[in-house]
Image (cartoon, rainbow, N blue to C red; front, side):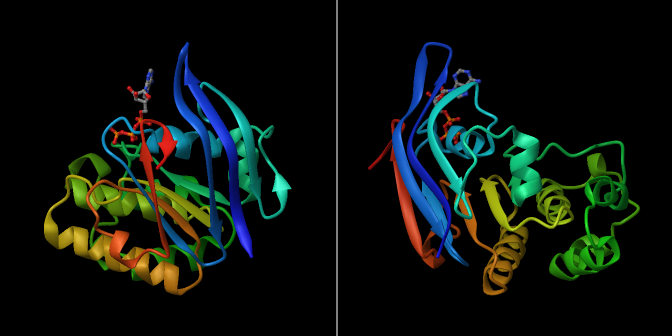
Length: 209
Ligand code: ATP
């Protein structure tokens, strides 16, 4: 079963076209890795799937519904969870507060689940996000998105610029989520997850290679 389908997606920044007729699918429980050099269009594609790009045309279907005309918040409520490359944490808030601010659904259950998935965060719940390492912040960003009870994850460079030990923890956590059936589309340049992917889609200058 196909969870997410992108068909002939084109996106622009002003007059500059960044995506050209991009098509891809993410099936139930699949890990699909999106590869490409800097500027290939990976972030733009994830944002377009969320409805966050400046201007786009093309079709985005999620669970058999065409969502291309939906605003971003409706796509998020339908189950699309997004972790941006810059993480967008609330630096002045603690780990616990960052988690609770996003919480939807079973708050206690989700909190227990994300802290089990990222044991390193469990000892830091009172720490301000701004006082954590890049890898810890990345874990928190993923954990915060998981607090919204998403049904499909879109992750932008989750292991970029992070210490090797924490890269391993993040990779293991994402693979555990996949084992639990979470479909994922992960943009990455560094081939941390590509070897375990069901499919690798490569973007070159805004086109699927
Ligand atoms: P990176 O890993 O460096 O983020 P990427 O594959 O995610 O690369 P995008 O960030 O999606 O690539 O960029 C695709 C194209 O769109 C590039 O040519 C880039 O210069 C352009 N672009 C990205 N963001 C903007 C913006 N805010 N305004 C104008 N052009 C942009």
